Image (cartoon, rainbow, N blue to C red):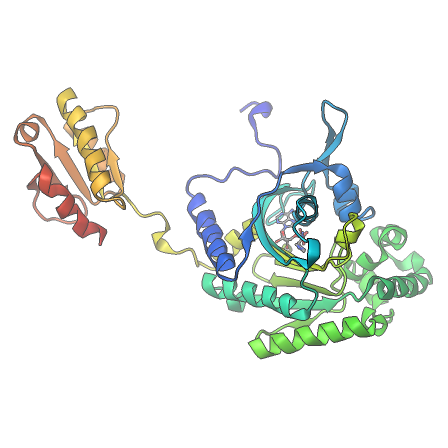
Length: 427
Ligand code: HAM
C-alpha cells in the first residue's frame, strides 16, 4: 500500500472485532459513574494552545515535547487536547458552573493526542475516560473517586491485578520549599545525574523522582523527601484520605516518589498500576488540583479527578482473558429469499418482525443468490435459524424455518405465527 494511505504512526483503527470490548468498557463505566451521581460533559478536541501551556505547565514533557500544535487559517495556535482536565476546567469556568460554590461531578470520554514514542500501551491517539469534581475540598471526595474506580475493577474482574499507589504533594508553598531542597541536594551530584534529569533540574525537578535511571534512583535514596516538607493541612488531608480508604477496605501503597507528569497537582495524587502490561502499567491516574481554576482566572475552586486509559484497560482484560463471551451475540435469524416477489415480501416481513420483537437480531439476505449460496451465508452468519422464503412459501404466506445450530427438522410457520415462535429464542 502506498505510504499516503497508511494511518499515522501511533494512531489506531479500532476494528469491528474490537469495538464490542470498547463498548463493554465504556457502558460499564458510564453506568457506574451515573450511579455515583456523575454527569457526562462533552468537550471539544481542539483548544487554544495557551490553555494547555498554562494548565499542564511549561517544562512538562506533555507541553514541551508532545503536543500536536498548529496555526489555523486565522493564525491562532490550536492544540489537539493531550488530556481532558484543562478543557474541563475551561468549560466549567466559561459556563459559570462553579460559581457560588456549586459542586460539579463530571465525566467525559474521548480521544487524546500526545506525540509520544508509540509502543504497547502507549499511543499518539489514545482514549481516556475522565472524571472531574469541583468545589469539594475534603478528602471524602478523593476517597470516593478511588472507591469508585476500585468498584469498576471489581466489576471488570481484575481487582487483584492492580495496586493503588498514593502520595501527597502538599500545598504549592510546601512543594516550592521541597523543590528548593531537592535541587540543592541534586546540584551537589549534578555530574552523576542522567541527561534527562540534568535538564529537569532546571525545568521540572520533581519529575526527577520518577526517573527510570538506576544511578539517579540510587542518588535519590539520601535525597530529602516530600513528606518531610508537607504542610499541616495537607498532612491532615492525607490522613483523612487514608482513614477513609482503610474504612472502605481499599489497600494502597504510599509511594513518596509519585509526582505525576502534569504540573497542576497538589495534595492527593494516585495511580492504579498493573504489572501485567509491561512498561505501560498505569491504567488510571489522577489527583487534586485546587490551584488550577485560579490559574485560569477563576475564583478559588477545589478540583480533583482522574483519567483512565481505555487502550490499556482493553489490553488488560484481553491479557487476563476477562472479555465476556456474550459481547457479540450472533443473529437470531437470517432470511433467505428467492426471486423478486419473495425478496419484497421478505423485506416487509422483516420489518414487521422487528416491530413485533424489538430485541430481535435479524439479518436479511442482500444481493440475491442461489439457495445454496444464501444458505451458506446464513450458516456463516452464526444465526440460529434460516427463514426461507421461496415462491411456494410466498403463495402460502409461510416461511420454512430451518434450525442451523442443531439437527431438528425444518418446520413451516405461518407469517402471523412467526413472531411468537421467534420470541422463544429471545427469552
Ligand atoms: P495522565 O496520567 O497523563 O493524566 O493520563 C491518564 C491515563 O491515560 C494514564 O494513566 C494512561 O492510562 C492513559 N494514557 C496516558 N497517555 C497515554 C498514551 N500515550 N497512550 C495510552 N494511554 C495513555 C491525565 O491525563 C490527567 N488529565 C488525569 C486527571 C484528571 N487528573 C485529574 N483529573
